[in-house]
Amino acid sequence: MAAALGAAEQGVEVLLVEREDRNGGVLNQCIHNGFGLHYFREELTGPEYAERFMKLIESRNIRTFTGAHVWKLAPFENTAFIVSESGIYDVYFDALVVTTGARERPFGALMIPGDRPAGIFTAGLAQRFVNIENHLPGKRALILGSGDIGLIMARRLTLEGMEVVGVVERLPYPGGLERNVQQCLVDFDIPLYLSHTVTGVEGKGRLERVYISEVDDEFKPVKGTEKVFEVDTLILSVGLIPQTEILKNFVEIDPKTFGFITSNTGRTSLDSVFAAGNDVIIYDLVDYVSTEGYTAGKHAALHALRKVTPSRRIPIIPGENIGVLFPRFYEEQEDLRIYVRVRKPLENVRVVVEPGIYSRKFDRVAPNEMITFTIPSEKIPPSLNRILVEVEKDEG
Ligand SMILES: Cc1cc2nc3c(=O)[nH]c(=O)nc-3n(C[C@H](O)[C@H](O)[C@H](O)COP(=O)(O)OP(=O)(O)OC[C@H]3O[C@@H](n4cnc5c(N)ncnc54)[C@H](O)[C@@H]3O)c2cc1C
Image (cartoon, rainbow, N blue to C red):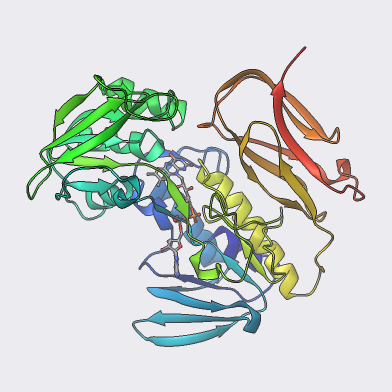
């Protein structure tokens, strides 16, 4: 919706295609608050945040096509193939913005030994059952993964009457935002088992018990540390994977994260194709998704109108201690907003952008808190061959 808005405000004709019956994506099932503090300077729930954008979309007369699945894209022919109840359509475009979001890492990817009973859900699916379809997944749950979705679901299931016996995290620190650890676990006395993982599941038909163990530095279970929980539900919150399959043979995709590689204007390796949101990197706040969506929409429209030709792209390189970095190229039409996740928690560090473009000290940084900052375009010499982003020890 933000991309559609960014494009429409440049005066182009926009079609917003969504396979669900309603626009808004994952926001529609996130009924907790905590959305919009940056973008609207208000604390909203997910559906309220989506509603704000729906109103903006309506006020701009943007055409939306819901219940419509884009099953194939032919970017060299500038064509999208759409399947819907009303028929199959070929839609021609001058520019395309892909905002397909992310999917959850499934149980099968974890190679956990044991039975394969009912009662094992990804957190997003459990959230959809509870918040949209009004079903409780079980009575007693253990949650694997302390990312934001896992933490939010620990609180949600507790509030709905389930007993949550713990959240298990293989890293020595939580994966989600600090505020969510406090508000979702500490406030509800839900134990957090750091440096632990699930080592086995048992159950005939329905899940009956889950085994966990402490892990060493290489995430291998430590003998003699096993605990067992009698639970009928295991909730998995073990990561989101950008959904980029629809363009995987056409544009550059990061082989490690599977996200689209884009410039700061959202442009992918194909001039007329832009991408934004969780299909590029996994953001922690929807506000950032909206900001980058709006920018990608705006530049897609400028491309469609032939108002700008793609400028030279300066590569942005992830240096020391950088786990996640957006964008990966700089195009000069925009200021450079950088989003970074560090690899591990660090103290007394400096985020540095070379050569000598930006530097800021942090007392503490951690992978669960995204760092973001903006460098005005006039501070970036167009002659640069590359921009390097690093997090280094602050010697001062
Ligand atoms: C449980 C949870 C809690 C969160 N809590 C917070 C919070 O407290 N505060 C905050 O700011 N952020 C929070 N977030 C993060 C934020 O909600 C997301 O980062 C953001 O909404 C992602 O937006 P997106 O548009 O990239 O992806 P999505 O919301 O996933 O949207 C992608 C859309 O694309 C559609 N689509 C995909 N493929 C196709 C296709 N082929 N054809 C047609 N349509 C297609 C999907 O149906 C979907 O509607 C939370 C996220 C989750 C999951």
